[in-house]
Length: 137
Image (tube, rainbow, N blue to C red):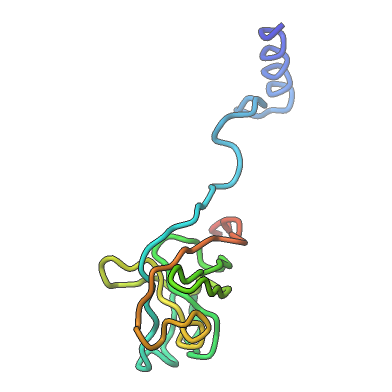
């Protein structure tokens, strides 16, 4: 029975003029992003107004964040593991550029997370909305 199903898929592919069989594979589907735990820091005042990786200017009062690998445009929940406070951020920049840190947040977000006084905090970063990859033209 399985041979018939594969044969039928190959026949349909041939009729459709495709060079790929219409058989689902394990590789199908969007890339999954998992939560990460590590150290967060926040942008210093010298970064206000500078261009981010997405081309927009950084605003210290925004919910912008920098992450090394999450796709630009990703919305993520950042939770301070010391006090349980959370904030939503949008990944719009690349970084942090300090070893051992996993995310940089805006000063406003740092205030919401209760980490501004210390400058850093242990956090969990949980992607909530990851945009699909846009095809290059």
